Length: 339
Image (cartoon, rainbow, N blue to C red; front, side, top):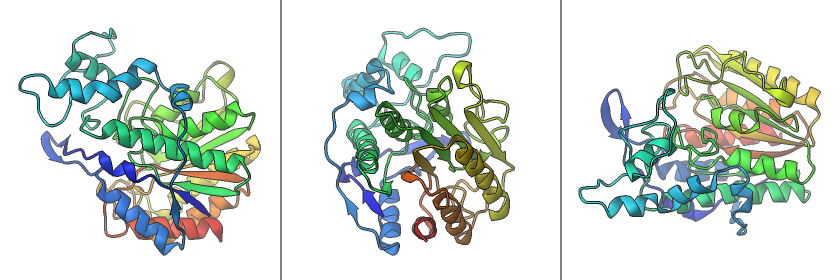
C-alpha cells in the first residue's frame, strides 16, 4: 500500500481545549503524527511526501472568505492588544442569528463551530498540507494505485464549507472525494470515526454522485450532537444517498463491526469506482475520549471488511488520539485491509 505524509502537518500546535468547563491540554497535538508513523512502520509501509497542488480543489469545497480567515486570522489576532496565544472565540451565532460581522472575534465565532478549533501559528500551513496530502493520494489512486493511505493531521470530517469544528479546518475526505467525482468517478465515502462526519455529510447532502455513509457513536450522547441521526438520508436529488449508522456508546468490537458491515453493503449496492474510507481510530477502547470499546483485533477485522469491498480505495486519517495503542490500532487496520 502507498502512504502519503507531509512534514508540515507538525506545524499546528494547539495548546488547549475547553472540557468540563476547564481549559485542558488539546489531544489533537503533533504527537499523533509520531504514533501514526509508528503504526505505518509496524505495518511495513513507508510514507512518501506529496506533490504540491493548487488551492482550486480545496476552494471547490470551501468558501474563499473562510479560507482567507484560516490563512490570516491568527496574525491579525496577535496584532490586537491583549490577545492570547490562541485565537478562540467566546461568542458564536445562535440559530436565531446568522450574520457575518466585520470584527475579528465575531468572525472567529462565525467560522469556528466550537472552542476546540483554535487558530495558532502554523494552523493554516498544517491544514493546507493535510488537505494537499489527501488530494495527492487520491490523484495516485485515480492514476492506477489500488489503494493509498493519506496520513492527514489535523483531521477534516467535521469541517463544513465555511466552518471549522472538532479539531477540523479543511475537510480532507470531502476534498479528495469531490476531486475524484469531478474527474468522472463514482465515489462512496464510508466514515468509521467514532464521531459522526457531519461536515462531510453536509457537503454532499444534496448530491447523488457521492454516497456518504457514517458509522459512529450515537449523537444523542456524543459530539457533534446536532447531526448524525439515522433519519438524515439526504435532500433533493441526494435523497437516499446519505446513510447514518449510530452505535450505542461503549459498544465493543462486534456491535461496531456489524454497523461497518451494514455500511459496506450500502456501498456495494451503490457500486462505486472509488471508495474513500474516513478512518478514525478513536473507537478504540484505549482512546482518551473513551466513547467505544473496539480492540485491536476489531480494527484488524474492520480492515478486512473494508478491504473486502475490492474497490480502488483511499484511506484518509481522521481521529484517533494519543494512547498506548494508537500505533497498534493503525497497524492492525492496515494489515487487515491488505490481507
